[in-house]
Length: 151
Image 1: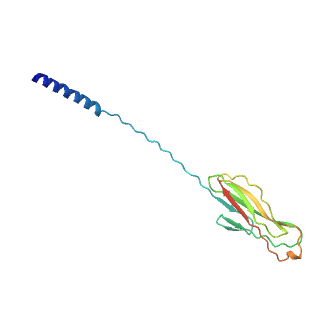
Image 2: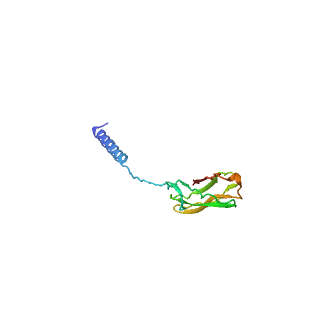
Image 3: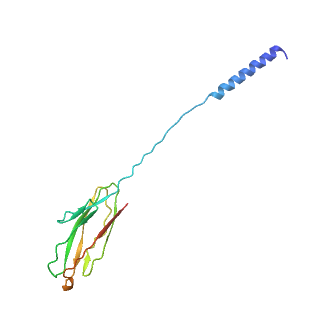
C-alpha cells in the first residue's frame, strides 16, 4: 500500500472517529418537580354551663349540685350544659350515664347530631325521681354523664 493510500485511510478514519465522537457527546436534559402539601385539621370539644353553682375545670369537666329536695313529691333537677366543637373536624358525640340509686333516674340525653367545627349544642341532663319516703331521707345520689367525641 502506498503512502498516499495509507495517509488517506488514516485521514478518513480520523474523520469518522471525530464525527462519531461529536454525535455521542450530544445530549438533551430536562427536569420537573411536583409537590403536594396537606394539613390535618384540629379536634377538640369543650363542655361548659352557665347554670348557677356550676364548677368548671378547663373545658373538660363541669359539676353541678342540685338544691336539697324539700318535699316527698316526685320531681326533677335539671342540669343544662353546652358542648362546643373548638376544632375544625366534625365531632360525632356519644353520651352515657351512670345509674343512680332508686327511686332516682338519670334524665336521658337523646342522640346528638354531629357537631361541626366551631359549632355548639345545648343539652340538659340531671336527675328525676318518683315520690320519696322516709328511707330516702338524707340520701345523696348522683349521676355522671360521660361524653365521648370521635371523628
